[in-house]
Image (cartoon, rainbow, N blue to C red; front, top):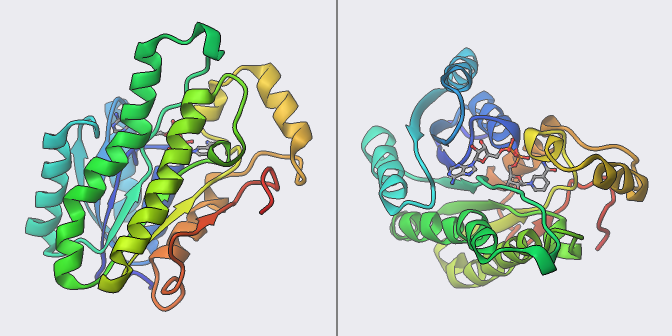
Length: 250
Ligand SMILES: NC(=O)c1ccc[n+]([C@@H]2O[C@H](COP(=O)([O-])OP(=O)(O)OC[C@H]3O[C@@H](n4cnc5c(N)ncnc54)[C@H](O)[C@@H]3O)[C@@H](O)[C@H]2O)c1
């Protein structure tokens, strides 16, 4: 049990990569504060049941992560229920597509708000407690698109590149408090987010991959366990780890 007694906040965790990380953390003994938003009641019940089946303790907070009051509720719930905040996983995100020439300002702003600004809001809210306890792990789910760009994805690429640069900066600020900050930048992973991308894009993308298939959530979650664990993850900071089928090679 690598995360026994640790408390993790995970955003957007009702499905996909966020749910995969929640279950992996539950298996490793973590206490969980799980944010969910815009999903069916049935998915929330399944999440709760699945976490409990691993013996994990979880509190579910429903709401939009771009709202400061939801962020504050998560932080206060973690502190009152579990007394510490050891790990923050910023996973919530959306993906929409548009050529730049057709992109409305609203579409750009929505992307930056959800995929980038929310990372600032949650991290700023937890960091004072991590500084006080002189330990913490911040894990931000970026994307390989933030490293290489993507057609019809200029807003998504900009948001995710912003997450990577933000992460490096806070790694520099917070290392002296024994707080690490890292990104995971997955390649295409079989989740609903990718299911909604147009077929032409998916076929083209598959051809570009060194391992010519999209990954699974179970192939991403172990990286989030590594970064949260001690001593395994102790000296990773400011890094961008890439479970990405070889879509980006650094
Ligand atoms: N699937 C991929 O190929 C892939 C690749 C690279 C990066 N990512 C990133 O991984 C993360 C998870 O994506 P996924 O593939 O699991 O997709 P998903 O659509 O299955 O999950 C996204 C989650 O984010 C939540 N969410 C969206 N807006 C929210 C908001 N305003 N407040 C709170 N929660 C919100 C959704 O409810 C959902 O649970 C995202 O940040 C995504 O950009 C995914």
